[in-house]
Length: 55
Image (cartoon, rainbow, N blue to C red; front, side, top):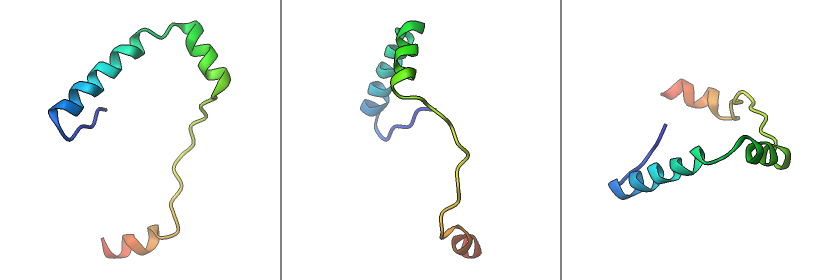
């Protein structure tokens, strides 16, 4: 998903995607070793229940 408010921002975002294609498996492994990505389900904040009553 790409989000942009202006055409220029969209163009920048699309250009950034070109860099992703150049990442080799070796480079990805090095990145993952330095910064492990462990996805977690989102947790509701303290005001979730309160907001849900009024929205």
